[in-house]
Amino acid sequence: MLGTDFILKALASEGLTHLFMVPGGLVDPFLPALGRQSAIQPIIAAQEGGAAYMADGYARAGGRFGAALCIGGPGLTNTITPTAAAQSDGSPLLILSGEVETSLEGLGMFQDASSQTLDDVGLMRPITRYSSSVDSPMNLGHLLSHAILNLLSQPTGPVHLSIPKDSQLAEMTANHVPIDPSVTRPGLLSLSAAEASLKRLLGRPGGAPVKVVLLAGAGAEHAAENLRAFAEAWRLPVATTLRAKGIFPEDHPLSIGTFGYAGTHHARMALLDSPPDLLMVLGSGLNERDSMQWSLKLAPSSAVVVNLSPSTLGEQMPSGGVLGDVDAYLEWMMSQRERLAPAFGATAAAREAWMEGIRAAPRLQDPENRESPAVPIHPARVVAELRRALPRDGVLLVDSGAHRAFAGHYWEAYAPKTYISATNLGPMGWAIPAAVGVQCAQPSKRIAVLTGDGCMRMHGIEVATAARYHLPITYVVVNNAALANVWLRAHQQGPVPAALTSLPDLDWAGFAKALGCQGITVTDPGELLEAFAKGLSADGPTVIDVKADKAYPTPVADWSAACAAWSYHE
Image (cartoon, one colour):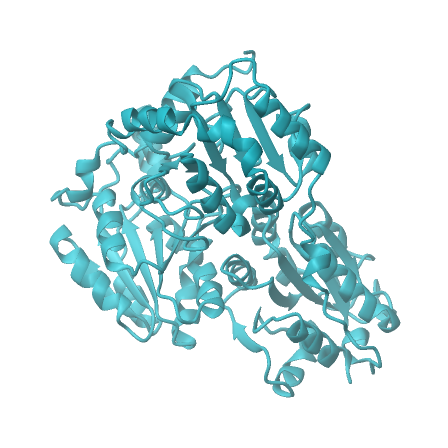
């Protein structure tokens, strides 16, 4: 078989069902190869960045990993931001790029971006787990396996493989052996560190802990079942980071919501107002937004931090951290029930009384905004009505902008992988193409996107891809004629900053119709639920242009207070 056939067969054997791509001369041999197989469906994006975002969405929604194919040079450079976003969020994204034949490198070939010119591999190295070029067709088989192994090893991240045309067209005799999940997700746990954490807990100088809180990050996503079982066994309240929103049901009695940026009052009260006796941080890197501007006070005597990343433990818990997989740690802790009973069981009633006091206070900032009759429409009302319309197991993708804060605060998520957002790097427009990948990975789910008019200007053209493949995605554009999150700061600095962050009010419903989508414009909040129902029942994509006001402040009062109080020197 040819190199292209080998690659496609290998990807299919790894469980891939879709390949997101933009055709071009350097990947021409893949086009007939795609026609010679039926296991992988090609999805043609409008732009290479969109293809990479789609593959990222596919990976986050439950695919083992996502893959995008493009030409090297200008095609690959279009994927740099998507790849960086995948790197910052630990998303397993495979970027395959075409390259000129190795014998022609550096001779002035059109779009040559080999190591002799632009050096595509070098460009991608800082933002990937692995970036390499197939220097000989003889090496294609093991280099592809090496890339996939790096892609899936914990913690996961993106990789890049450049494939020159001679490797694409070479006759291959190798067979790809799919990588066993036990190799890439072995459930590693330092038992000595786990045992040490338990002994510290049992031997606390202050006695058995009453105020115990679990803070779950994205590294606990695969541990949702054990997280719930552990919390319920000892009546432990659970907060999640924004990136992990949904891994613990937010309508569960033990949920205290999101901690950090756009978090709930309940999470702030439990973690900061009166610091807990014991805080268990499970799979969070504790960056600025996850830690409420680094407000958490972590010490071995009052915290347990579990993470697969040695560097994260070294930064956050130089001594006393537990290096390991969160699921393996929780499973081990569940096996220690008899030892835990004196500490956790004996204090359950007192803990419940403490939590009752927290639950008596408002959970959300300005909750009345969810019912606001205001015109232009309040974004909180948009979020509330969309939550009512989307099925419980529906998936919401959230883009970057002011709408991210409203969604993070007011949206309730009930299961893992039902609230998806690129939260660390936060590229605008990410969610629009990413939803295509999510829908491909979860064809039976209803998918909705909450985005903004600024985001639509960046990647809105990819709604045409959703239309081309008849994907029933509902795109909700919070159209406030501004780069609202920036405008909220800028307009206080004078008329020029306000003007620079304002945008013309475009007809996004008309734009959508021109690209083959259903388009709906909503100007009255009373029309939202009907519009969402219409979009969610369609058999193709719908773009709903919601006319909102840029002046509504985002629900980040707790976050702002933490930022104002924080000092690097403390």
